[in-house]
Amino acid sequence: APAADSREQLMKLIQDEVGKHEWKGPEWLTNLKITGDVRYRYDTSRRDNQERRDLHRVRARLGFFSKVNDEADVGIQFASGVGAITSTNQTLTGSFNGKAAWFDMMYFDYHPKAVPGLNVIGGRMANPFYTVGGTDLLWSVDVRPEGLAAKYKRELNDRFTINAAAGAFNLTERNQAPSEDTALYAGQVYVTMKLPEIAEKSYLIFGAGHHNFSNLEELQVAANLGNTVVNGRVARDFNVWNPFVEFGMPICGRPFAVFADIAKNSAAGGDTSLAWLVGAKYGKCTTPGTWEVCYTYRDYEEDSYFDALPDPNFSDGGTEGKGSKISFGYQLAKNMQAVASYFNNDRMTGTNQGAFQKLQLDIIFKF
Image 1: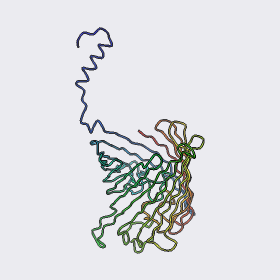
Image 2: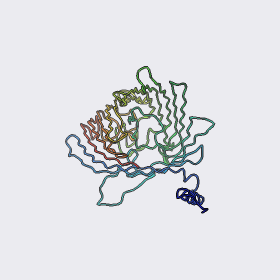
Image 3: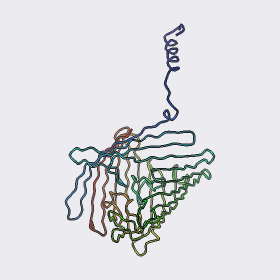
Image 4: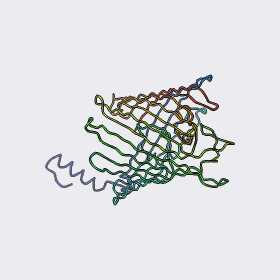
C-alpha cells in the first residue's frame, strides 16, 4: 500500500484494497433472505368416554426468498410434517425414525411497476386472502393454496384503502369418472377505513369473499370430517359467501380488536349451511415482556364449508362442531415466544360426537 501518515489511514487503505477483490456473487444471491422457525408443542386432548391422549410434536420450517429483479420475487419453503393439508406438525413417535420434510411453499410473485399495488402469484403459496383477527374459520393457517392468484391494493385517500384478491386453485386432478377436475375459484374485496376521530390508529375493516368449489360434489374422500358423505363421496356442492368485519383501536397503549366472520353455503339447504366466528384480541407480542390474548367462539354446520380445510385442532378438525378457543402468548426474549391455547368444543354428530377439550403448550424459536 502507499505510504500512510497514521494507523487509521493505513487501515483504510488496506480495507479499500481488500474490497476490490471481495466476491459479491450474483445479484439474486445478494438479495436472498433466509428465514425459519422451530416449535415444540405439548398437546393433550380428551373426548367424552375416551382416554386422554398426550402428544409431543415439533414443527420446523426453513424458507428461501429472493428478489429476482425489480418486478419479481420467488420463494421456496420447506416444512416438517406428514404431508397433511392443514398441519406441518410432526409427532414424536416411531422409535426415533427419521422425519420427513416437504415443499411447504414454492411460488413466484410478479409485481409490475406499470400497475402499482398489483401482485400476481403462482405456485404453492400462503393464503392470499385477508382473515379477520388472523383467525381460521375457513381454512387452517397451514393450508397452502395451489394455482394462480392476484392481489391489488389502492389508497383512495388518506382515510380509505381498498383491497381485492382473486384466485383459481387446483384441488384434485381426476383420471377416472367423474372426469372433471376439482377446483376452487375464490375472490375477496374489503375496505380499510381509518378512524382518527375515535383514537389514533383506530380502524374499521369490512368486506366479503366468495368461494366456489367446482366439481367437488361426488369427489371421493378418505375421511368424513363433517360434510354429508354418501358411499365415500361428497354429497353436496359448495358455493360459499363470506362477509366479515373487524374494528380495532388502542386501549391503554395496546392494540385491541373485535371481529366477526361468516360463511354461508348457498348450495346447501336447510340448517346445514352456516358457519360463523366472533372474537376479540388484545395486545401483541413484539419486544421481550409483551403479551397478547385472543378469544374466539365459532359454530360450524355440517355443509357450511369443505371439511378438509378448517383448523384441525378445533373439535378435532372439520365441520359440525362449535365452541371456544382462548390463547395467550408471551414474548420470552428476542425471537423466542411461549403460547398456551385451550379448546373447549362440542362435536355435534358422527362417530366422535360429544364434548372435546384440548390444551396446547408451545415454545417457538424464530430466525
